[in-house]
Image 1 (spheres, protein in one colour):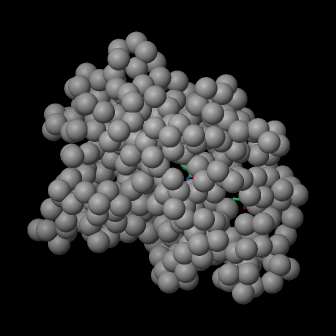
Image 2: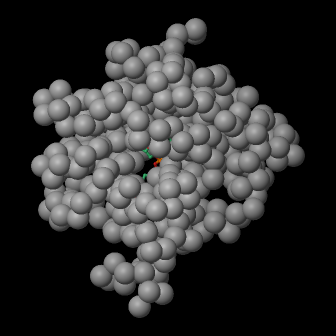
Length: 342
Ligand code: NAD
Ligand code: TYD
């Protein structure tokens, strides 16, 4: 398979690119990423000279660029690129609407015109909004996004749906719960707590810390995406999640135990406005139709994650210090070629 991946320099995208090329060595990937603050090419350092991988820096909302890239024939587009952090969307959501809505539209439109045979749109469970205790969203549940981030992702989901309904353009949508694992940017809960704890800093817990998320190890998400890409039904939505919501405080306490640090580092801070209480979803469709099951439970996943961050202190220091943003200029020519290839 020849894939165009968007947002492949981010957390899940980089894990997916690595996973996909490892499990499908005859495939090739073109990674298109704007390299916002969240994009870190160092995440894919070992692939820059691989013959079946290429990187292009660019914006998914740039229609001329997308059209030019699609002159090359791809078997599918896997679309990760997005603004993703809820707190940033609360501070201001223009970029979220621009990339998540307009960017997704630009890609869908070009892909339909160029007849790219499959389009996998990577979505989030946050579009369903907060679930009551005991309640689980299925793919038919109403969309009730509560943060500007979730609203912009819901906009993207609805555009994807309309391209199937109107044009029969074969879009597949996934809606996954909170991911964690290697290479996650330390603005998100788990890597932020690990980084702070390792530095002896306080761990800021929003509100009472009892908000629940259905944490899934990023590799399990990548395997689900692979299944949906290969065997999912066009026009269909597939929920992806571990299936067991856990309170933030429990996650933080487990991390502190793994890191051998005291619970006294926990600091309760002002709650996030509009903070969703509980995300929970049913993944029956994915399990039943595509035979997918998560392989990594929270205990193993958190241990692997903590071990990874402990073993990658340099990566974390460069991300926290901002040096990672110079990686592209340092290693790529102005024409976008990797320097060691010249
Ligand atoms: P991330 O923030 O780590 O990475 C996003 C990537 O997209 C970055 O590399 C960034 O440079 C790139 N990007 C942003 N705007 C762009 C643009 N206009 N053009 C090209 N590239 C652009 O995000 P992530 O956590 O890896 O999430 C990836 C996708 O998965 C997103 O669509 C997100 O909504 C979805 N998702 C994430 C989670 C999660 O827990 N992280 C859960 C479910 C779904
Ligand atoms: P986050 O990783 O931002 O993901 P999302 O908001 O998309 O679910 O946050 C996960 C949970 O952790 C969420 O309930 C907010 C909470 N949280 C904190 O308590 N403190 C923090 O510093 C952060 C970043 C998140």
